[in-house]
Amino acid sequence: MLEVRGLTSHYGRIPALKGIDVEVREGELVALVGANGAGKTTLLRALSGVQGASGGTVRFDGADITRAAPDRRVALGIVQVPEGRQVFAPLTVEDNLRLGAYRRGGESAAATLERVYAMFPRLRERRASLAGTLSGGEQQMLAMGRAMMAQPRLLLLDEPSMGLAPRLVEEVFAYVHRLKEEGRTIFLVDQNARAALAVADRAYVLETGQVVLAGTGAGLAADPQVQQAYLGL
Image (cartoon, rainbow, N blue to C red):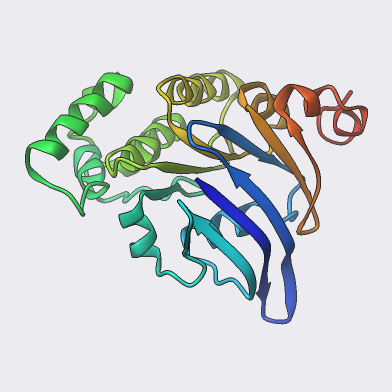
Protein backbone atom coordinates (compact mmCIF):
# COMPACT_ATOMS: atom_id res chain seq x y z
CA MET A 1 0.00 0.00 0.00
CA LEU A 2 2.79 2.42 0.95
CA GLU A 3 6.23 2.37 -0.64
CA VAL A 4 8.90 4.90 0.35
CA ARG A 5 12.21 4.92 -1.49
CA GLY A 6 15.23 7.14 -0.83
CA LEU A 7 13.16 9.75 0.99
CA THR A 8 15.07 12.80 2.18
CA SER A 9 13.84 15.89 3.99
CA HIS A 10 15.57 18.93 5.44
CA TYR A 11 14.95 21.65 7.99
CA GLY A 12 16.77 24.46 6.23
CA ARG A 13 20.20 23.01 5.51
CA ILE A 14 19.94 20.36 8.21
CA PRO A 15 19.08 16.87 6.90
CA ALA A 16 16.35 15.21 8.95
CA LEU A 17 15.71 12.16 6.74
CA LYS A 18 18.61 10.62 4.85
CA GLY A 19 17.37 8.22 2.21
CA ILE A 20 14.56 6.37 3.98
CA ASP A 21 13.28 3.09 2.51
CA VAL A 22 10.14 1.67 4.16
CA GLU A 23 6.99 -0.09 3.05
CA VAL A 24 3.63 -0.91 4.61
CA ARG A 25 1.45 -3.64 3.15
CA GLU A 26 -2.32 -3.62 3.36
CA GLY A 27 -3.57 -4.92 6.71
CA GLU A 28 -0.17 -4.65 8.41
CA LEU A 29 0.79 -2.85 11.57
CA VAL A 30 4.30 -1.55 11.01
CA ALA A 31 6.17 0.15 13.87
CA LEU A 32 8.95 2.71 13.70
CA VAL A 33 11.09 3.00 16.82
CA GLY A 34 14.07 5.15 17.70
CA ALA A 35 15.39 7.70 20.15
CA ASN A 36 14.26 11.32 20.43
CA GLY A 37 15.51 13.29 17.44
CA ALA A 38 15.90 10.23 15.20
CA GLY A 39 13.42 11.63 12.66
CA LYS A 40 10.36 9.52 13.45
CA THR A 41 7.85 12.36 13.56
CA THR A 42 9.48 14.02 10.54
CA LEU A 43 8.91 10.83 8.54
CA LEU A 44 5.22 10.70 9.46
CA ARG A 45 4.84 14.39 8.63
CA ALA A 46 6.49 13.75 5.26
CA LEU A 47 4.07 10.89 4.60
CA SER A 48 1.04 13.05 5.43
CA GLY A 49 2.43 15.93 3.34
CA VAL A 50 2.91 18.41 6.17
CA GLN A 51 6.70 18.20 5.87
CA GLY A 52 8.14 18.61 2.39
CA ALA A 53 10.35 15.97 0.78
CA SER A 54 13.63 17.12 -0.76
CA GLY A 55 14.32 13.85 -2.56
CA GLY A 56 13.12 10.30 -3.07
CA THR A 57 9.59 9.03 -3.70
CA VAL A 58 6.43 8.19 -1.77
CA ARG A 59 3.98 5.89 -3.54
CA PHE A 60 0.51 5.00 -2.29
CA ASP A 61 -1.32 2.19 -4.07
CA GLY A 62 1.26 2.55 -6.84
CA ALA A 63 0.61 6.27 -7.42
CA ASP A 64 3.40 8.80 -6.84
CA ILE A 65 2.22 11.20 -4.11
CA THR A 66 5.63 12.67 -3.24
CA ARG A 67 4.48 16.21 -4.10
CA ALA A 68 0.78 15.78 -3.30
CA ALA A 69 -0.80 18.30 -0.92
CA PRO A 70 -1.93 17.10 2.53
CA ASP A 71 -5.64 17.38 1.68
CA ARG A 72 -5.10 15.22 -1.40
CA ARG A 73 -3.49 12.55 0.77
CA VAL A 74 -6.43 12.66 3.20
CA ALA A 75 -8.77 12.17 0.24
CA LEU A 76 -6.74 9.10 -0.76
CA GLY A 77 -7.11 7.70 2.76
CA ILE A 78 -3.89 8.68 4.55
CA VAL A 79 -4.83 10.08 7.97
CA GLN A 80 -2.47 11.08 10.78
CA VAL A 81 -3.01 11.14 14.53
CA PRO A 82 -0.49 13.86 15.42
CA GLU A 83 2.06 13.86 18.20
CA GLY A 84 0.66 15.63 21.26
CA ARG A 85 -2.93 14.83 20.19
CA GLN A 86 -3.69 18.42 19.06
CA VAL A 87 -7.41 18.34 19.76
CA PHE A 88 -9.45 21.51 19.29
CA ALA A 89 -9.67 22.50 22.96
CA PRO A 90 -12.53 25.08 22.74
CA LEU A 91 -14.81 22.65 20.85
CA THR A 92 -16.84 19.79 22.25
CA VAL A 93 -15.79 16.17 21.95
CA GLU A 94 -18.48 15.52 19.36
CA ASP A 95 -17.55 18.59 17.32
CA ASN A 96 -13.93 17.40 17.29
CA LEU A 97 -15.06 14.02 16.01
CA ARG A 98 -17.31 15.49 13.35
CA LEU A 99 -14.43 17.62 12.09
CA GLY A 100 -12.63 14.36 11.33
CA ALA A 101 -15.33 13.66 8.76
CA TYR A 102 -15.30 17.11 7.16
CA ARG A 103 -14.81 15.56 3.72
CA ARG A 104 -17.84 13.35 4.26
CA GLY A 105 -21.28 13.88 5.73
CA GLY A 106 -24.79 12.65 6.18
CA GLU A 107 -25.66 9.13 7.21
CA SER A 108 -22.18 7.75 6.47
CA ALA A 109 -20.52 10.06 9.00
CA ALA A 110 -23.27 9.43 11.54
CA ALA A 111 -22.76 5.67 11.29
CA THR A 112 -19.01 6.08 11.72
CA LEU A 113 -19.59 8.29 14.76
CA GLU A 114 -21.58 5.50 16.38
CA ARG A 115 -18.75 3.03 15.71
CA VAL A 116 -16.25 5.45 17.28
CA TYR A 117 -18.45 5.80 20.36
CA ALA A 118 -18.73 2.01 20.55
CA MET A 119 -14.92 1.72 20.56
CA PHE A 120 -14.44 4.63 22.99
CA PRO A 121 -17.43 4.63 25.37
CA ARG A 122 -15.81 7.34 27.49
CA LEU A 123 -16.09 9.73 24.52
CA ARG A 124 -19.83 9.09 24.33
CA GLU A 125 -20.11 9.93 28.03
CA ARG A 126 -18.22 13.19 27.48
CA ARG A 127 -19.57 14.06 24.04
CA ALA A 128 -20.79 17.50 25.19
CA SER A 129 -17.63 18.35 27.17
CA LEU A 130 -15.02 20.73 25.84
CA ALA A 131 -12.02 18.81 24.52
CA GLY A 132 -9.66 20.95 26.58
CA THR A 133 -11.19 19.60 29.80
CA LEU A 134 -10.38 15.96 29.00
CA SER A 135 -7.54 14.04 30.60
CA GLY A 136 -4.49 13.14 28.52
CA GLY A 137 -5.76 9.62 27.96
CA GLU A 138 -9.20 10.85 26.93
CA GLN A 139 -7.64 13.33 24.53
CA GLN A 140 -5.65 10.50 22.93
CA MET A 141 -8.87 8.54 22.49
CA LEU A 142 -10.41 11.64 20.94
CA ALA A 143 -7.51 12.13 18.54
CA MET A 144 -7.73 8.50 17.44
CA GLY A 145 -11.49 8.67 17.13
CA ARG A 146 -11.26 11.87 15.08
CA ALA A 147 -8.90 10.10 12.68
CA MET A 148 -11.24 7.11 12.41
CA MET A 149 -14.04 9.48 11.37
CA ALA A 150 -12.13 10.04 8.12
CA GLN A 151 -12.29 6.28 7.40
CA PRO A 152 -8.54 5.99 6.83
CA ARG A 153 -7.03 3.35 4.59
CA LEU A 154 -3.62 4.05 6.17
CA LEU A 155 -3.55 5.33 9.76
CA LEU A 156 -0.39 7.17 10.86
CA LEU A 157 -0.12 7.06 14.65
CA ASP A 158 2.49 9.44 16.07
CA GLU A 159 3.51 8.80 19.70
CA PRO A 160 0.07 7.75 21.01
CA SER A 161 1.48 6.88 24.45
CA MET A 162 3.46 10.08 24.94
CA GLY A 163 2.99 11.65 28.37
CA LEU A 164 0.54 9.03 29.63
CA ALA A 165 0.65 7.07 32.86
CA PRO A 166 1.57 3.36 32.49
CA ARG A 167 -2.03 2.21 32.98
CA LEU A 168 -3.22 4.54 30.22
CA VAL A 169 -0.37 3.44 27.95
CA GLU A 170 -1.67 -0.13 28.24
CA GLU A 171 -5.18 1.08 27.43
CA VAL A 172 -4.07 3.03 24.36
CA PHE A 173 -2.09 0.08 23.00
CA ALA A 174 -5.12 -2.15 23.61
CA TYR A 175 -7.06 0.18 21.30
CA VAL A 176 -4.21 0.04 18.75
CA HIS A 177 -4.30 -3.77 18.89
CA ARG A 178 -8.06 -3.72 18.41
CA LEU A 179 -7.70 -1.56 15.30
CA LYS A 180 -5.13 -4.02 13.98
CA GLU A 181 -7.50 -6.94 14.64
CA GLU A 182 -10.15 -5.09 12.62
CA GLY A 183 -7.78 -5.19 9.65
CA ARG A 184 -6.68 -1.55 9.72
CA THR A 185 -3.39 -0.70 8.05
CA ILE A 186 -1.30 1.20 10.60
CA PHE A 187 2.12 2.86 10.63
CA LEU A 188 2.94 3.40 14.30
CA VAL A 189 5.63 5.64 15.78
CA ASP A 190 6.24 5.40 19.51
CA GLN A 191 9.15 5.86 21.90
CA ASN A 192 7.79 2.96 23.93
CA ALA A 193 9.68 0.43 21.82
CA ARG A 194 8.62 -2.54 23.94
CA ALA A 195 4.90 -1.87 23.48
CA ALA A 196 5.25 -0.89 19.81
CA LEU A 197 7.22 -4.00 18.87
CA ALA A 198 4.79 -6.21 20.80
CA VAL A 199 1.88 -5.24 18.52
CA ALA A 200 3.82 -4.86 15.26
CA ASP A 201 3.87 -7.30 12.36
CA ARG A 202 7.06 -5.67 11.11
CA ALA A 203 9.21 -2.81 12.35
CA TYR A 204 12.05 -0.45 11.50
CA VAL A 205 14.64 1.14 13.76
CA LEU A 206 15.53 4.73 12.91
CA GLU A 207 18.75 6.46 13.99
CA THR A 208 19.72 10.01 12.97
CA GLY A 209 17.39 9.99 9.97
CA GLN A 210 18.37 6.57 8.66
CA VAL A 211 16.87 3.08 8.89
CA VAL A 212 19.49 0.91 10.59
CA LEU A 213 17.47 -2.26 11.29
CA ALA A 214 14.33 -3.87 9.89
CA GLY A 215 12.50 -7.09 10.63
CA THR A 216 9.47 -8.57 12.33
CA GLY A 217 8.28 -7.00 15.55
CA ALA A 218 9.13 -10.13 17.51
CA GLY A 219 12.50 -10.47 15.78
CA LEU A 220 13.58 -6.94 16.59
CA ALA A 221 12.33 -7.25 20.18
CA ALA A 222 14.68 -10.23 20.55
CA ASP A 223 17.63 -8.50 18.86
CA PRO A 224 20.41 -7.83 21.43
CA GLN A 225 21.24 -4.47 19.83
CA VAL A 226 17.61 -3.32 20.10
CA GLN A 227 17.28 -4.71 23.61
CA GLN A 228 20.31 -2.81 24.82
CA ALA A 229 19.52 0.47 23.06
CA TYR A 230 15.73 0.68 23.38
CA LEU A 231 14.37 -1.95 25.78
CA GLY A 232 16.71 -1.43 28.73
CA LEU A 233 17.82 -5.07 28.75
